[in-house]
Length: 424
Image 1 (cartoon, rainbow, N blue to C red):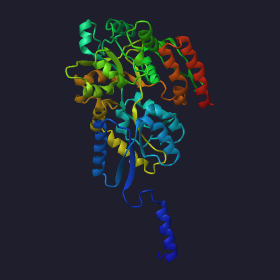
Image 2 (cartoon, rainbow, N blue to C red; image 1 turned 45 degrees about the vertical axis):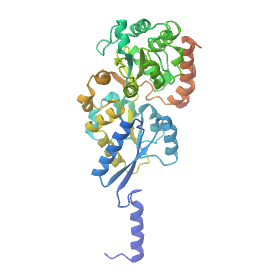
Image 3 (spheres, rainbow, N blue to C red; image 1 turned 45 degrees about the horizontal axis):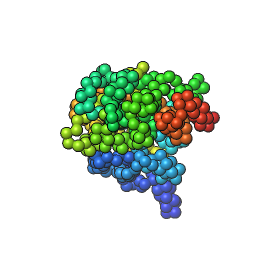
């Protein structure tokens, strides 16, 4: 069949208009925004991008460096401006509003069975909103106690293990025994108090957020929610086994005092071990201990790091394939070692490199089965609740400005007013 010249031109233009944006017969380009910041982690991510590009000439990935400090606002701006990266690195507790806002693609049906089955359902729960899956959880970080091994042994205290952890009451007693003039048993770095308090409270049976039969979430502060904050508060105000000066500090701020013998223990995220390895003075002996256990045992909340696909990405299938490549078990191990965290994948968790006693890897890996989605994972309005209500309330309670009753009242009354606006 012959097509007139003018009609042929129109047909070609229509076909060109149907081509995928950025494709037009050439290789597809995907923008991958990574939040890796430790040098080992940045190197691992960049190496994997290079390996993908070397074996996938039709789908090129461009590495874009992001920052944890500004990721929420930066992503919101880029989503609304239509300039979001195709593959988005974030944390699961930051996804709810993006998922409900239609900014992230539902990955149901895009992910291979291998990846779905390798990651436990408890981890998938952290990225499931409604009936959709809006990210792949791949790294997780338990909170542990980093301890001065020499001081623990000199005090003759029982050394806890994942099989026989301290209770919260025993932890308080041990901290008192390790204290003395100018020295403290523990330092609580609570510059960001909300996630630390809520996640550790799962071990004591605390939940704080409760979803009713109507599907709406409300704040209810129970006895289990009080155990962790009361322990830290009393260590500062009553036992004097913890200094008030670190309550406004970040984890890194406590390390010089820890190395100098001022604090015998510091509750920190598992990844802080890298800083300790790099900064500890020669001969300093330290070890990783499990966080205390309560009515919920060693259970604690985590907000896994996640990989998502932007809803505006024109190549969602290829983006999902790239995520699958990044999270093959050997690659997931590389990412975990680079970030000094735990992989979510069951096959990666079995890697011998994650079970060595050196630098406390085995202690952290033993906690993996007890990690659960952070209590606030699916709560719409959590970010505002945290910033406007919970953070100032916990800070004032820990500093002694308000009591436990006032803390409960503000979290419940003021907090529920905030959450109600998001659940109309």
